[in-house]
Length: 424
Ligand code: GLC
Image: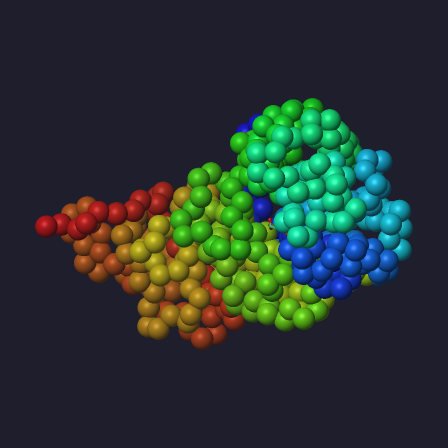
């Protein structure tokens, strides 16, 4: 399947990590894996997961206000708890939590109704499933599985093939449910690192997906069948090969943790977003709703702030591709799909001028995106085919954006850059 065109133009997606970990505010799944809490303590959170204020329409409205074009919800994390009414396995919010109902359905409908693409996160690994050969450190193994042949597989220990078959059947059953019931536009796999691609049977899984939803976009944790690269938390310094998406938390946690107040500021988020799209990627910004389904105000405010910046600068965001390589402009940039308008993003208020180097194409007009104010510009220097420097008058204070100002350069032809070492 060629990449769906909606994906590289989406620019912003919202990642939602929602699960029982929000009850006590512990790390999603990893807290019991790493022994921060026992498995029993972790699972005791089932009783506190109410979804009492869950309003998927309000979530989807917020994602629209944020300027997102897709959302990805954790349908099942490594802890094995399904957020939908699954007929496979024994662990879902329907039968095991006071929420008592399918939570994926409302999300899918609300997101889709508003024209956003629907993404579902699904972990290959399941650290609760009795047939899953967990790689949990032996000292944290669940006591009831102490004798289970695969609760703590020693290196080189042979697999129990029957158990593994059962596990794969369970996974395939769940993925089939997600595909047939929700027809996701994107499947965001995770937890691939515990097994080889052959063990996961990704080829068969890929065929299963293609048989139901051939247009579904798959992230790189679907291994060789992934459609796009999935860097996490650390911004790449050069664009990964092909389409890509940077996933990032809004504070330091994927799921809700009251004590984590280390929120990125709106300006930091605008920077991450601009730098990501300037390198041709999407930002998948994560929020963590409380156990009752409400999204903390700090997260709402940031999403809305980012949405304000995106809607003011929509022409520089949507319908654009990666901008200039480093060194031409000291900040990110994007380029219209016809390569005739260049958008320069300025994080700090420019002093006196914005200088652009190595631009061969003549510039017809420079305006401030959002206010439309035209800025004077002139090229100084250059020799033969080596261009001089384009000096653009700095925008007046009234034309500056609160978070990042964008200048639109209308070119007289397609962008043509000089990248050489200059003339001897
Ligand atoms: C990591 C973590 C997981 C989180 C994911 C999001 O893979 O295992 O907890 O959901 O990152 O990208």
